[in-house]
Image (cartoon, rainbow, N blue to C red):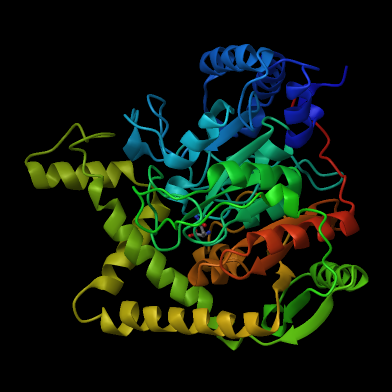
Length: 492
Ligand code: GLN
């Protein structure tokens, strides 16, 4: 029999329902792969016993013909989601030993639907980063390598454990979060499918907050079908998150394969950035041609505010982060400095020891742009430009149904290559931050390999709550690209 880990999530779901294999067999197959993949450093915590217990309970339900839409499917969870009684670190030293007394709404929705948790996935500290190198637990290694080269590459970030674990088939699928690109960029760098839904589609309740007006949860999966199945379970209204939207959740899987004929695809000229490899340009042109061949109408559009997106993001996101991270003070949970003289030095020493350099940089920037005298010049102005970016997209979406761009300006890069210059690192998100600032749903689909054999992704953006059209477009791209490459299993 084939290894259950070689089945897509949708195939595994069907095989479990048809009793072709058991949830325990599937779970054991994944746990065995996780055990052999230590070199990838994708997991912070593996919950093997809990997974086997959950799988047995799934098998009991499946035997009676019962169970939810994800019954028995083994998944991995970014360590930013609170999981009841299970260590949740946000990959930060400051959350040492934190076992939340409650479950995040999104992960809880997956367990409600029968999924099995394999463990908690590594990430950039507090989701700040694009390469997984800011994790207190060390970087995740991309399962992909350049042809004939053993250099360790980044799986992207901040959801790098989620992307690597999906690409290396350590989980049937995973969940991540995307504040500026942290689902789509790692998906692009690992040949996986990543979806950031519309802001408000998934509840943020129980997700360790980074920048609350930008954060959204979403799946990283092997195929658009798998991502559609995942998102349907994850999404939904939650009265505990006032920004979650009370709208019915469509059957995204049913949208796959529906004709894209007549869809208008916008191609924004401002997404052609300096220094982007010619191969990404070519892939983008291929993507345009594929959509045309599928019967879409291609529309050249202009989004001149794009150039302000990164500067605006690096004011708004740190501002919100500086406020959200004020709660880590060593009093209620997590790390507390051993040496201090008074309460103030306890706070200071705890935060100095507990946060890594990138997190400190964000807190400093955020505090600066919010401080009296600078608030109007930075924060308020950034909010105004953010509104203009939103309006510009709204105008574009009067003319088009989807926007097609590259997902990231480069393929996976080597660890250490961009750590010296934060701005170089921030540029990774040049194509993705716009979607967060405007609250749009977006996805990255693997579309090809570069000359060194590394995966490249294409991004689609849609109107708020148009995820069904997004999935239609993703499926069309996926069919045309025919991406079937897999990394060589050098790790174990
Ligand atoms: N790379 C971006 C940052 O560092 C986005 C991160 C994210 O989406 N969580 O802020």
